[in-house]
Amino acid sequence: MTKPIPLSLPSVGFFEALAAFKAVRSGWLTQFGGEVHQMEKNINDFYSGNSDRQIQTTSTSNGTTALHLALLALGVSPGDEVVIPNLSYIAVANAVLYCGAKPVVVDVSRDSWNIDLNGLLSSITQKTKAVVLVDNYGVRINSEVFRKTLPRNIAIIHDCAESFPAQVTKNGIGGADLVTLSCYANKVLTAGEGGAVIGNPEAIERIKILKNQAQNPKQKFSHSELGFNYRITNMQAAVFNVQWRKRERLLKRRQKIFQWYFAALSASSIKWDTSFRNDSTPWLFTILVENSNVSITKVIELLKKDGVESRPGFTPIASTAYLVDKIRISGSLIHSNELSKSIISLPTYPKLRQRDIKKIVNALQLAIGH
Image (tube, rainbow, N blue to C red; front, side):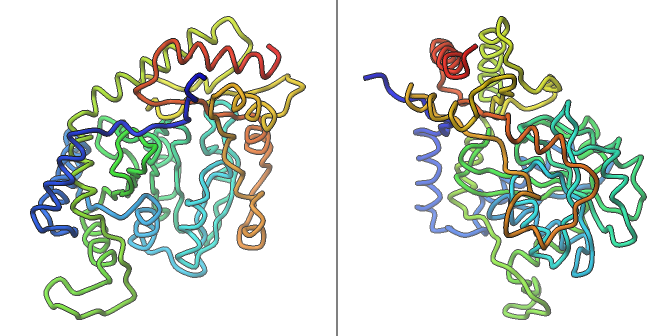
């Protein structure tokens, strides 16, 4: 029997295990171990290398807590509105709700699958405190364009969970006030879990306090406000630091896999995100199933029978039942609603071989009847 092809497989092995073992043996298991400091330095050096802005980095327990802390550090509070794309992972909306603010949902561009600038501008009111730009499926947003267009009093958070480790721009973090990252198991670089926030030093210093139960850094067990336990562990950071040293190799391999997909699909009518560029990140190869009599649910089912795991696109935020009375919808959501019914993500991870890609594409074409 042919071995099934999973959607994602972490590229971790002996050296990640050894690094985690050494972290455990050191006796430093929490955020105060040296691996956490090194992780933050690696990320900060990466983003500040070509930047004329002073920036800092702090680690977090995951990408969702990174978003929550970023929103809090930029002053988002009850009564505020935060604009987010309708097509994105649910964590973005949840993070806004954690702050007591209202998510304002706008459509995405049909071309890039990322938040539509004109729709965003139309959604702004006096209550708008911030916007969250999400790099859907690794396709990078130029946050500098948004910064030049948006009023200066509106903060920009750039959620690069799916595009890291692509640099936001040659100018560090671009037009964003804060950038958030995720190191979840299916990301290009993983720590199992984990995340980070990069940006304005003043905001980062506040995040450092908030993520540690809002404890006064100069006085043990002194807390002046509500805080959180959003810290990463030394073992997770140790795994990340090994991944960091492999990042160029991991990225090149994923780029090769994308090229294999492009070649295998070139003669078919199957489409993918055409806005994917060299500065985007080959995170998860995602296609559009259009002009087919077969639903994506059925396609996913047929692929599974052929030993290929796949998954549908994100459920639109506005279509999520528990959020209906907690959000404000601005404008038409036609593109995000249509895309969500047509998107399928295919296996993407460095251990895939060209013959695996051919098998996946053959199974896909049989499933959709192309």
